[in-house]
Length: 171
Image (cartoon, rainbow, N blue to C red):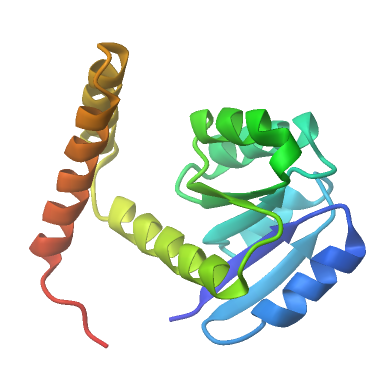
């Protein structure tokens, strides 16, 4: 099964270069320069993972992240950002981004993170919204109580136990 990947970046050269490198199995790659047509692309092609560049979009990119998560909360978003804008990455993670990758990045690492994001999307699809909400609220309570490590550990255990319930992966 392929991964439907959407690259959102206003820099057409970077976007097309990245697209050329990622148009390999198991990726089906689509492109967008910004918000125009984004909702339509996500719906029409059943997008699994979005690579959202914050380099030029900045706060508009965060607005796009909010829109994506509101329209299709199951879609995983990986932020692409420069080291000079780490506050945008932090805010994006708070808004529900799966991960952030800093430019320059290793293409193999990016492909691995895309596959991880897709796996997470599939795992979330197998759990009810209520169960996901309970886990998130419990983790948030730990984090607010000054125990962020405990929150991460709890979420990692939940993810591991969900994987065990599905049995071994077939290759």
